[in-house]
Image (cartoon, rainbow, N blue to C red; front, side, top):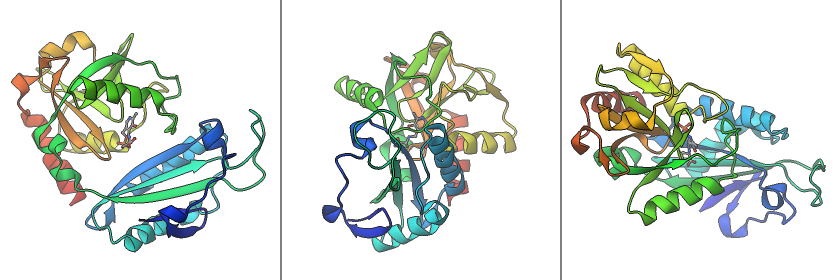
Length: 278
Ligand code: PDD
């Protein structure tokens, strides 16, 4: 495939990144995943705004291409002949000696990869997922979309080993988010509930879009933590992300939600979201 690296489009096999890039030595890096549907990037302005916030929070210089990213993402898709799929955008600080506080002299490293994908026909979207709970062992700046993803990799591998699709994290107050998604519950009154934004979870672009669609549809919204003890009584549960879109959750730790049937509010929001990206 053709990737983008530091100002140039090139074959992935030809790409070279310094072993002294702080993304490699210190795990410093931020990223975004933006999907493309019928040639159109979905919520790209929100993803790029979050990338800028992540860079600022990590005290990382934006890459020189920052202002030009939408055009470069479109060009990357075109060079790979991708009409449906995703663009991965990653920024790391660039090169310094291995010294914790050194400031890079050169540019930040910008790497972008495009992949084909049809998320609206994925099994997760159409049939739903079975998940488990795990304590949220991550750091306390989960609002930053960092490439430092060891806890998520461990949680997802553990889920897979248990025959499950994913892990939802919880802290003392309730569910924080999925390992790569935000989580929503519909209660028996039909209210849509998701945790409010803070340093404890990522401000998902899909979360924001779903809240707007739900509000416009006249649904009642509550932003508060979902407690694990509430789950057996939950009417519906789903997770959101750029690549899940809206994935129904059919069971948690073996406890069926809505008898493992996709609920009406979830279906309604899926329909509204498909309509939005169409
Ligand atoms: N992950 N929470 C976490 C921890 C995430 O990693 C993601 C996205 C989300 C949802 O954010 P959004 O709706 O903006 O995609 C929430 C991407 C898809 C990934 O890591 O592949």
